[in-house]
Length: 248
Ligand code: 13P
Image (tube, rainbow, N blue to C red; front, side, top):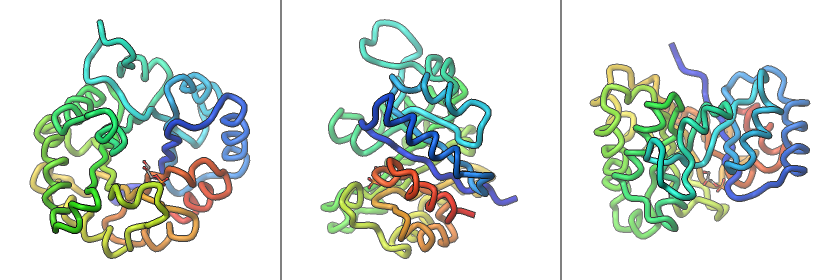
């Protein structure tokens, strides 16, 4: 059985009640019955809005982060139980912006992934090298180290995660990895998953980093690219819909 591809939008810290409603209504009006699974990941204050507008439809939703802790004195954090209260299916964990600007280590990212899974939310685990790491020939070592921490933490649940390969130099820069560059890393990640789970083909490995309506089809045609994690282009309904249409 081949898995459906997954196209997930990461709105990052963008949007507002009015703009979200316009975007979501445009998506719902035109998405039809997509061949791929589709989701949008919004800032936490808008999860209730997503739940009320998207419930029962073809677009799932999720958060951009989740606390590594279950509950308690963690000011500013959002727990997986809270995400569940608002119907989230997914939580992005370990996005490079969280690693870079919020000091998230491999261990923290692994704990978040584990907490999400335990709470019934699918973690979209982001891995990816910085430009200097690529130039130093460290790409494979970096992504394997990042994924290994998560595999170690989630153990027998590894087949339930989603992985997103997001080369940091491609995020928000308009510099996409070529399909061949991306496929090469995806194959490495698939092999790593194969050593950890009996069903590595069940783990969707998304590509993220300046994916857009023009380059989506060639990226999604690669054998180990099972979907996309879309930043900028997910904020424009026509662009996001074209990427969804390219995923089959
Ligand atoms: P862009 O698509 O804006 O490059 O962002 C990618 C990303 O970081 C998705 O999580």
